[in-house]
Amino acid sequence: MSHFVIAVIPVFHAPPALAARVTALREQVDAVVLVDDGTHSTAALGLELPSLHIVEIAENSGIGNALNEGVQRARELGATHVLTLDQDSSAPDGYVEGALRILAASAASGVEVAAVVPEFVGGQRVLLRDGFAFDPIQAGQLIPMSVLDEVGPYRSDLFIDAVDSEFSIRAEEHGLHFVVAAGAQIAHELGELVPLTVFGRHLVIAGKPRHVLYHAPFRTYYMVRNSTILVRVFGRRRRRWMLFRTRKMAEMVVGCVVLSPDRGAQWRAAVAGLSDGLRGVTGRISEERLRAIRGSRRRP
Image 1: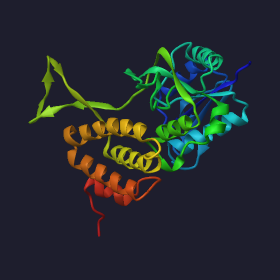
Image 2: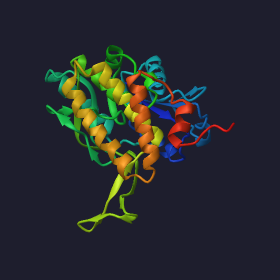
Image 3: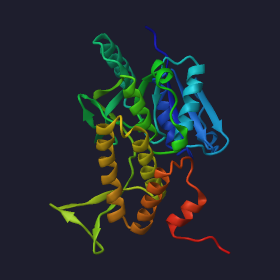
Image 4: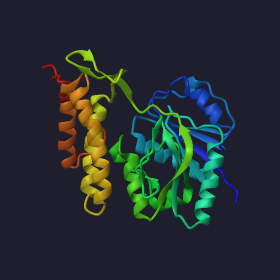
């Protein structure tokens, strides 16, 4: 069977390093689709490559919609498989070829596959349950177009965070599994490490300075809000799945709220996210919410 693999990369304020990543990636795929999510920044990269396609979205619409736009363009171009990447991630040489072999071997053994995912993303090993990847992030997923047609589009109203988780749940409800490419490593920035301080001093344990994985308060808002929405939608029928994911997410959020330098803003973001999630609020965070999280007020 012949394959036509297209990489889909959502772009938000394209970093200069993206040009080199796309150029290197072009050796592994048949085409690349860059989806500029309202920043009109891809032209500055100066990329002139065969089979490079740029989708311009008028205004920032979120990762879910950007992925959907990219997948649709890939579909129109005749893609049999889509490789989803972030603008700050890159696939090692031979990754796509290896993932295609894994897909073929899985199909031959009767495994219904949602996607092939790397074992490591940003140096972190993917979580496993029952031998398959649990809730993998979208960077580095090689997905058959038939799966995207079956499972349906990414949920765009989540805007950012948990978009890949929501897709994973629906894929698993279709009886599909996320198969791990053993040893494969995708370079990816998972967040900013900031010093873990106690009474103003950098905490050192066993001779090693300790850090906490930091996300800006607005990201904490989306993490809590969208995770709450997932629990409301899937909690009853996917209880074990949601309990496991929610525990991991809560550990990350609590770390930011308790240990980050902007604890107050982190706390307000978490509370606002929980409140909006319980009320089913979706879409981009409102300016009013942002001001409240920052602790600022509108001038009279």
